[in-house]
Length: 119
Image (cartoon, one colour):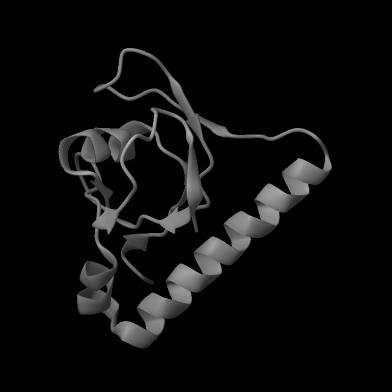
């Protein structure tokens, strides 16, 4: 079992929004300036986290995943995660609807919506 939660983001929300406001990055990925909370990202990004036994999961950079599982498996996890996300997004668009996951974060006064593919 891989002790990493593989997450794909297509929208800037939750903990990603918080990091973006502070550093202009999400899980170490530099994003363009001027993005809005819960706005669509220029392209989906891989934003893995640790699988914490207690408390909150911690965001990881891709290099952090590489150090945990090696480059080959990290690349495969990233590519599979983004592929699943993109396939689900295309399917939702073809049905003219989407089924985002609703996330209410303690660091935000309102609920935010985003897609997350987790396995």
